[in-house]
Length: 105
Image (cartoon, rainbow, N blue to C red; front, side):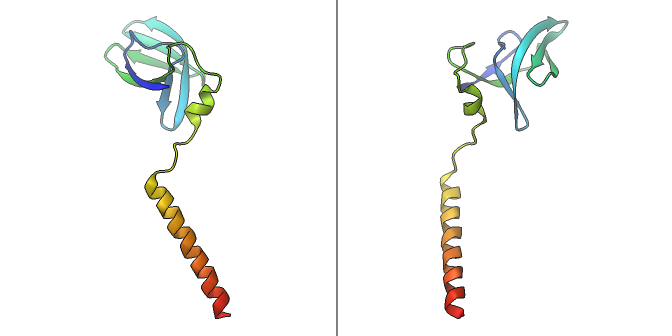
């Protein structure tokens, strides 16, 4: 999977648009006056003008999607180093707080 900038001339069926936190696969591509109308998996239609440039997800090679495409596309990113350190610090603080509560009894 890679991110690609596309125009009305280069967008393909099977490309995946990200709108907000949702992914929409392009099912149909129809030329209309002034642009291209894209039919998305949600049933929504999106009209892309000739001047619009979008960034989409595309599998290598174009048009072929791996069997686990949606699992890969929707998988949350791995935690950052800062997030891991924060979780360790909170865990250690919790253990110390529990130990102090037991000793204080």
